[in-house]
Image 1 (cartoon, rainbow, N blue to C red):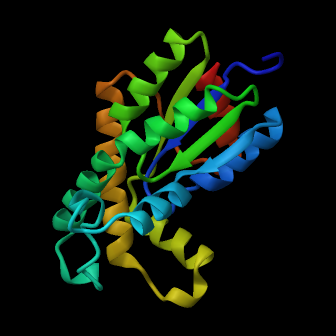
Image 2 (cartoon, rainbow, N blue to C red):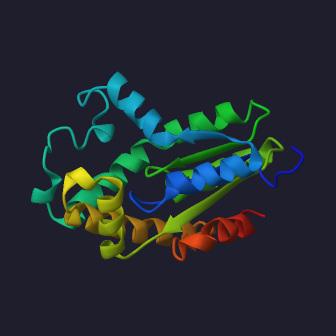
Length: 198
């Protein structure tokens, strides 16, 4: 694919740290297709039940996660992400059959499945890359939520979970030999991620 250093790039990271914005910028620069994995997650949830696929319905009976400790929510989020790994591979395998570059981004992309996708891409002669964004400061994530969702009030607990999840993803990405890029400074993020991908 002329003009690109990748056929598919996976962008993982916690909620509220700028993955969607980065994905849009990378896609625009490379004339690539964007896959928001949250859409896939919504489809999987709609087509399954807690009885048959409990691992993707951990949060169904928890209307208010702020009543749980941060660590409890984090454990459930990690379990959900791991349960969704086959869906990630399904998306990647489908995109490998299409001669258009793609950016796949989402909270539920684990480093383990990203490493598998990179390996499968190499086996099929395609360039699959993965990068994980990191923001470990819950204050910064709280501010991001306030800017993005001004009508939702301060989402401090959600931001604390997101920061903890970001640290877990960064540790796992390092363990799998995948690049981790700090979100800040924002104005150099695209350039720093591009360097990692190339």
